[in-house]
Image (tube, rainbow, N blue to C red; front, side):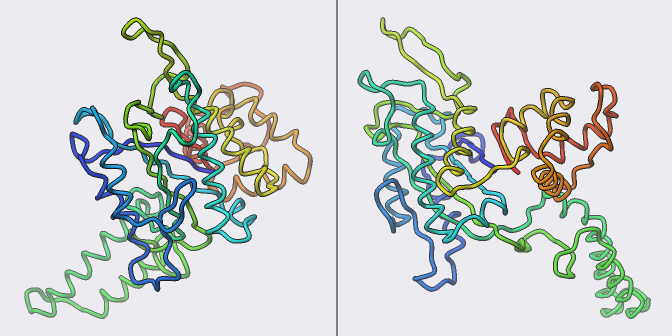
Length: 343
């Protein structure tokens, strides 16, 4: 499971409208027949229009400064192992989203009218997507870039030869291009991976847009709070504040496992990822001690991430060479500080 929580951000200040983000989420419906389209939904309604989402989010921003986000974006990307557990990806992910938002509200250390935050206090809209494309900052695209640059140079030379601007052999350059296409380190279905190419395999994921203000447009509910749990005096009253991301991420996994009967492997858990960051010695020690079947699955998943695996259990942190350790951290692809979790 890979979850990110990010504030709305466009330029130096926050846009007054959610229209740009909502339009972006509608890109996958372009060219599809009506029955194949995925529509926005919330806790109780299906088939919500983009216009309604924009109207409701934009109209729920009372007293927010231009330097404050109007909404937060939550992206939930189950791993291929989790997706393979689902029977109907669209319906199952919709069901999961509605359970997940219960975990979301329970992670706030806030009270509204003397009671904890409830589902009815938040205004959110979600949409399921089933495709992903390679982005410019993906490892595959970045490492293929030197080949892409050389191929572009050769194609430009061919055009110049055709226009008579330079002399040269077109066939020789075309052979060089074919050779570079095959030599690029990252391929998919026999093609060099480039930015914008659709990713193979199950790619279903969830986008959630949740208003910064509560449904009454009176209280601020920020999952971006730097506080997990604290209290502050305001106008002579003691106000609770904070959002516990650790709790949210852990419960997100438990909810998925409970809802779909998923048997989570040790290395798929948020807690084990945190352990890796904090104490790699204990992490690998626990990994080696797993039952044989679970350990085999764990190493299979690790190899798929491209993560180098030490031949034995390190007896101290110094035994993890600096270069290898840095690669391990990149291979895990997790940033606790930015609140991202994933497999």
